[in-house]
Amino acid sequence: MVPHPLKGVLFDMDGTLVDAFHPIILAIHATLQHFGRQRIEADEIRRQTGRGDCTMRALFGDDKEAATEHFLKIHDDYLLEGIATLDGVEPLLQHLQTRAIPMAIVTSKGQLRAEAQINHLGLSDYFDCIIGKQPGLAEKPSPEPILRACSVLKCSPSQAIMIGDGISDTRAAKAAQVMSLAITSSFSVEELTQTGAAHCFPTLSEVSTWLMTQIR
Image (cartoon, rainbow, N blue to C red; front, top):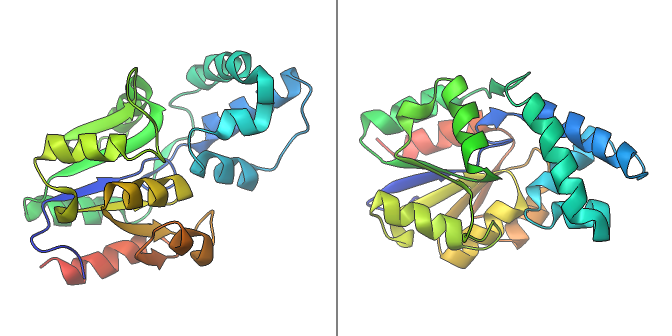
């Protein structure tokens, strides 16, 4: 069961609402090559992204800072290229909007980049706020961005749910004491439940179907 009353729904962005992996994968591959690292497959890049703020350290070690700068330069050149809204997104957002349930995005993507992609896809009007990477705010799996979103939505953590596809989402939600719904596109049910997911679903469409039965 979802919290009752439900006063806020928080969404991860990449892999949950949006397929924005084209510029990420392109930039990671180019950066790995530039720093003489071994190429990795797209599925592993998705998993690395879903682990949260340790991604660049895991891939580039002591070269993290320089690699991040190189990655972002390439990524931003292709920021809007090949990105798309995932199946099931708009019916769920419309369902929540008609029931006047506030919504937010909580992402580790840079604030301006997240806003640009969401605006490009025509989704901005659904959300009360986008909480992205910004100075002075810890990234997921810290609970800080989730708690910031709850504050903006004027709901307590016990009145919110978090929907995401990464273990950074489930860990952050658990730490914030927010109910977590997880999509198993990059991580297994076991990985996600062990890190805090209350329910797991193969796709957002199936999250949407289940959630619509809970929110009438």
